[in-house]
Length: 231
Ligand SMILES: Nc1ncnc2c1ncn2[C@@H]1O[C@H](COP(=O)(O)OP(=O)(O)O)[C@@H](O)[C@H]1O
Ligand SMILES: [Mg+2]
Image (cartoon, rainbow, N blue to C red; front, side):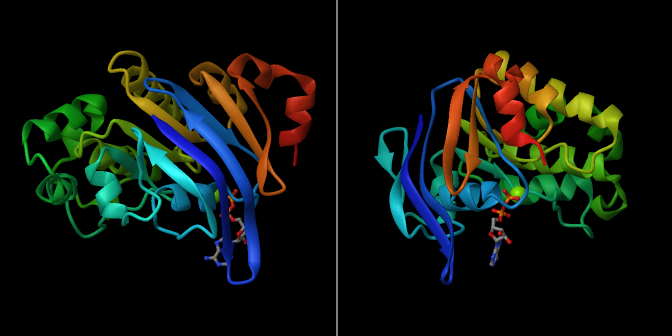
């Protein structure tokens, strides 16, 4: 479903990615890991067209989207939840979801209810301004907002970062349900090894600007993999 080949990215003269190869199969959950600052967020931003690559290609559903603007990628079914769970803080939960609905291709109001079914806790908070939610609730809202577009590939950047443990469990359950019950393909950047072990089908570890090691999720328990992730 997603095929990334030889992706290179840089900020000015500072090169961050030196040729990343990565694939996410239809209905599979791929976890990208790596130490802080290795370029995971840069990779996702480049996949989504937020950053232009220096080289390489991004193919989604057989179509080369490397030169397409971000909104065209969203239109084709790539849903992105950036790191830092940002929402419109002055807008209510309901308004945050409606903004995405109006911008979506389908404009089907049922998509809002579908997204709320994934995070039932948000149903009690519809009238609250997003800025007054806890970090974990904002993360749920950020994911729900992306789900309103009805993506076929969900790209998540550290969805459990800075989230209280009770909500980490809800977010994990939601991702598992989206993946296992609805068959959504997921590209997940996650530092929390245990969660990756439980959720992922496959993993890729970024180091030195490229995929240093990849394999089935079970191998995440290997000592040499853990050593690669150790700070
Ligand atoms: N907007 C930016 N301008 C310049 N350098 C950046 C920018 N964003 C990130 N970097 C640098 O690029 C490298 C990779 O960052 P990032 O992709 O955020 O890593 P990760 O998500 O793996 O923690 C880091 O060295 C970071 O300092
Ligand atoms: Mg990051």
